[in-house]
Image (cartoon, rainbow, N blue to C red; front, side):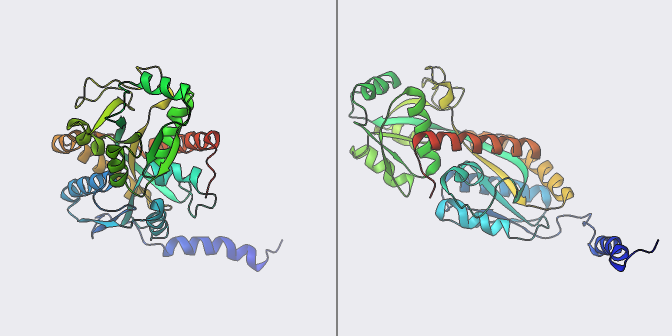
Length: 323
């Protein structure tokens, strides 16, 4: 039986293509690595990125260059990472928004967190604080829930981004209450309005709100982590208060463009784990209420998938329509 030319050519082309692919360099990395951060400098994700990048650079013997690509809920930065060469020299610090919540908030998200990125490792997690304006006669979560059950929508809650909006909506759903949402472009303006009383309730990052709580400008009612924080040990968790499904952590994880060589993923995972085990790094994070949470690539992938499914369900129940 004679084979047609294309039947001969197809397997030969595959072999030729494989032969043309450069072997992965045994001395990887042999040049600087770019870490895209899809958010502005100064925030929690940026701080985590720069702390990690510094520690990784020392261990790799190559600079990790942090590149902020802020705007539009992290979408431009995520696209920049997605379309970068999958050669191990571009990574991205993803987080709860870019790798999970954006799937619930955007109907035509121009990237797929599950398919367009290869996971490397979880990095960190930080709980939120549940706070109210200090002038309100509300001193506990029970007070807040009782007030809103008696007077639905009588309080405004602010949010600087979709993750904080949905975190509050998850609380509303489990407690059986409703509040009026007021969106903000940043946590700073939201906190200013909370202090002034223009909004009455705010869920935001522990590190952002803690100074306002300590000086009495706002009142903290609870923390959204499973366990209490050593920085505020008297503050109860929502789980303790009978609201276990309201647990929320603002988390970060490192990913790379899909197709990045497995050898690079393995090397980067090892270095991230070693960096996050450094007592100095742990202390730097802990001072901000942040936990170091290294993982395997598969653990990050599975976690991000579950988070995406969770927040899609919360958004649907809350009637939040994707943009």
